[in-house]
Length: 118
View (cartoon, rainbow, N blue to C red):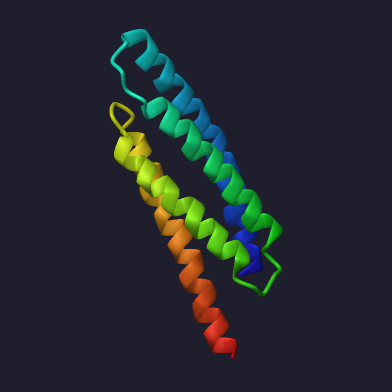
């Protein structure tokens, strides 16, 4: 689990940079089109939450407690809710669904490993 959390944490930080680039382009497009959409801003918040969750997973990879996984789950569920505000930024739905899968996956996996060890 330690190695997986490290790899996924690094991957989430890299994805945060990619999502930030995409959301900046979408936000600029929304501003130029003056269409009133806020999907670029939602993408920016998703990128920040990806970055924060990646850092939390890297920092808490060696801990036995559920604190890091609970924090990651909450942040990733917030990302999932941001996907409903996709508008013209259709990739935001993909990043939001991926966030929910990662957050719930690590939380359930940690619960299963914890119950198995006890």
